[in-house]
Image (cartoon, rainbow, N blue to C red; front, side):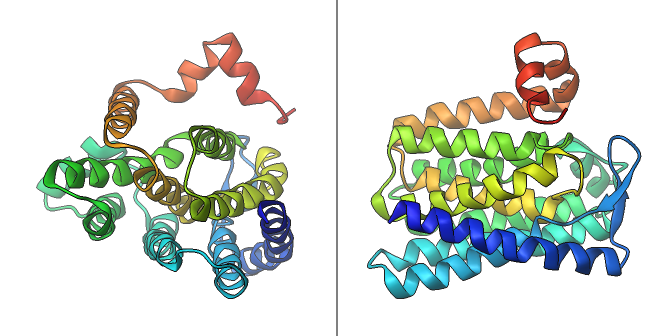
Length: 269
């Protein structure tokens, strides 16, 4: 069944990508890529449509815990909504958690701060259901928030964010997730595999409308799959990575490491 869902997810992605691309281009929703070329921005919204269609199919034909699907969809729809606002009117002068919070205390509400606020609220809402105590609740909230931002951290070069998403999905598969959640991961992988070629060739930008829903999906799968102490390990790694990103450039760090640069450039040239 996983292979069937993978195929369906891939087909749905193939169907939606040209529709979304034409929609964005006809409405002049374009931005400069890292090469200075004008390309459509916000292609990640296709992930929202793909997951909606996949979820309807899964809901009808499969006997799984439908609450998993509803939880994922709540996260996807909420973060895609705030993501598209950030893509369209976002202020790029204040970057990172620290920058958005500093702006807020100067009475400037950035779309980034709005994303932090709404992301935090939806993380609390979802975590309340999946947590058995206060400590687990706090950990689950932080995991969802940091995963939501994680893919966005890497979405600075073509294909990089999608590669990270695929890597994390594979790791979760290897660790082991409940059967009902495997279907969700397979749907994510199906989208990423089909979307990757045009993203890695810098033909379009996924935008926050894509990176945020992908991130929160992985976050929800993580909190519903891992044992408490494994969650602490993952949370520690995510915190360290975000602290690193606040101080240093992830792109420069990748470029200065021969192995990471090779993996990052793979498929781009």
